[in-house]
Length: 220
Image 1 (tube, one colour):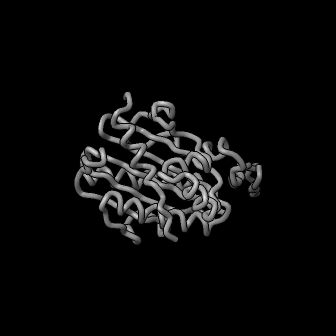
Image 2 (image 1 turned 60 degrees about the vertical axis):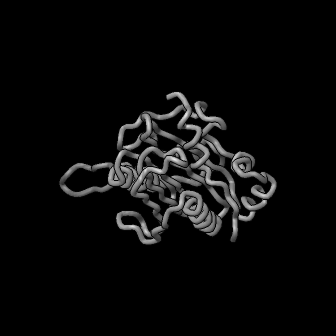
Image 3 (image 1 turned 90 degrees about the vertical axis):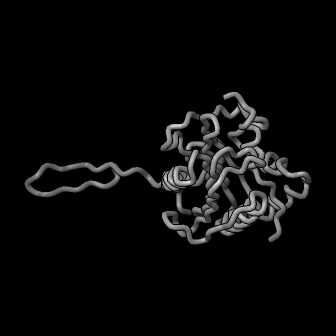
């Protein structure tokens, strides 16, 4: 599918550059009964707030959270209309998102000066839509930034695509080497990006955030 999706992170990064900173019990004899509480498997969100609860709250680098309202348009909850509005032709974008089965999304950013980490989660009607969206988004972002996609990146799950760039991309407002990952987990896509002083630091941050975020999502 040729999506024409606008690179959402590119827009947000540009704005950041000018923003102010008992189920289950076991018994043995003669030992007393021991209860092992197991957390129920998370269910699929039915609204944006339930989706928000699945997002990571902090990142390993310790960067401070950027308040959602410090961005324009704000980060946080994203509807079909919000995401469609990133493109030049909102109506065409909305039609494309409908083909993916887009339901809802949430965005979150952390920043300290030029160092930025972001997590975008989007939920779809089915895994096929999520997978197609992630593939198209990765391809579009690679074209926008001039990077190369790695479809079998070491240290990331097999359903992830990586784009790691060795140098800063100042023409797009990135003052350090960026690393991007687009992953799928069931009916979700997870897009993580990190800009750090070195490419190694960006990749380390990215890998850790991807692992933490995917671990919080239901599989179905």
